[in-house]
Image (cartoon, rainbow, N blue to C red; front, side, top):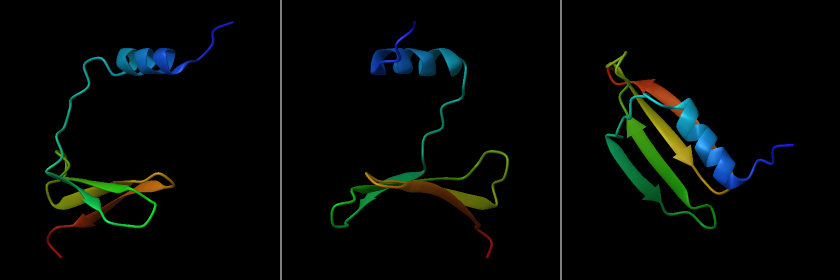
Length: 71
């Protein structure tokens, strides 16, 4: 039986993403909140330069939202 430890999970991630393009966010920053430690990453997708996407990651929740730059 294979035990999934953080080491195995990290190795699996490396194997499954070999050759994947790495995109650097155009902006990244922290939002000051009480007890959540929210980080924001922004980027413009290569396949649609008319939108901007944001990824919010926190200790409790996270998510992605995209919006039109032209609006």
